[in-house]
Length: 285
Image 1 (tube, rainbow, N blue to C red):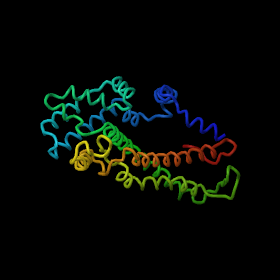
Image 2: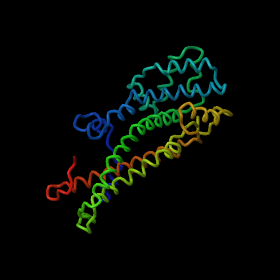
Image 3: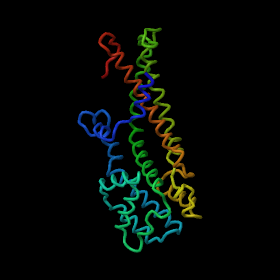
Image 4: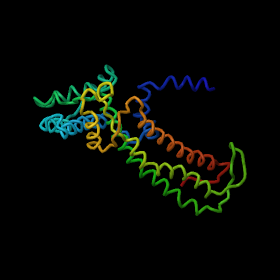
């Protein structure tokens, strides 16, 4: 019952089980997408973290907060640096985030006297959140045309089957007749809604995160707000106040993705039900 569900929710899959689900030949084709997985894999996400550190240095140099020479050196090193995933993993185990280990590696690679300007005035959560948004934006750029293709595939089913009768169902039981064209329209509508929300989502959810220590931007006062705005420009994110405790941007993206999964699951479940041998109303081509 609900008690079992609650218990399961309080005991998520162990890291080992999650890793097995994403890397096993048995589950990888079902639970993973190779292109999206690469965006959030060790190499892909580490590159995003370094991209944010480089953008931060450029933003600060643009405002005269750090020397231009330091910005150029940090940017050069960040673009070429390869990080050891095992070291980042150990850093997460020790600090909860990989950024201290990443910053230490970046500072070792940056030439004197510029290394002290690495990560200047930032906090770990700034780097992780901005990197996460960059990876999510890349994933959304991949998902958007796929969603459009689904809508395009459903569109001709509506007029072509406007008079194709089939059984309607309520709670799995036969109800008044409907047409297959109407069912296709119902499948398409939430997908169309979700596609229509993408522009607004890109503005409201993909917002820069820069709060510095304690999230108040005081660690680099009085430049905090200006750096946040300049960092947003460098990363092509929307400007905004720090959101690292509210998590609103990530919640918005997760809500959108959950609704997309629900819409696609509806299509799949209806197709499975209607294509059962004893029903045979539709077949998946």
